[in-house]
Length: 182
Image 1 (cartoon, rainbow, N blue to C red):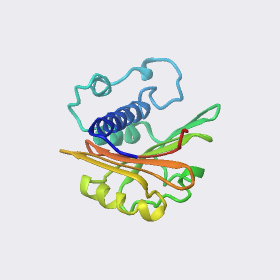
Image 2 (tube, rainbow, N blue to C red):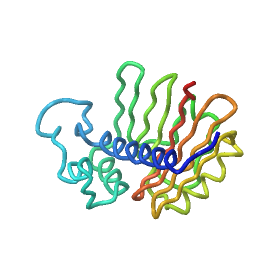
Image 3 (spheres, helix red, strand yellow):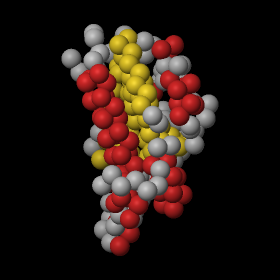
Image 4 (cartoon, helix red, strand yellow):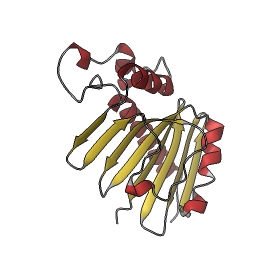
């Protein structure tokens, strides 16, 4: 499969969207599972991130959301969100190596489709070093790496029909494992 610059750009844009959506998930409902009231208002920093006016790093925003709201878990149908906690024990993450650095901020799983984890306290260089472990964990098909001045994405497939994206942007690392759609 030939990877073009356009496909690399699309992949990077998708990962940036994922990073932003994960940061919004961590605090947009006040950490109370969606109950209404004054606590459900977005902070001005969250509004700025939602509109692309990032005055704080996404990593700082994720740390603050977990610190101020504490850990919580929300389940809806086949989807589960959780803040804080340890490395996910989701089915899709069984063969994915746990990074030696970083703090889990948000986890999400859609059973049978995909699982994502967001980490803070992990530098760009540490993310790149972690990505070097992924081919040895079986994600060694259709490898694509994109490094664009502070944003980084590693993408690959496994022979088992899974796809992984590992990305870094603004002090936030996301790792997403999903089923390859044919």
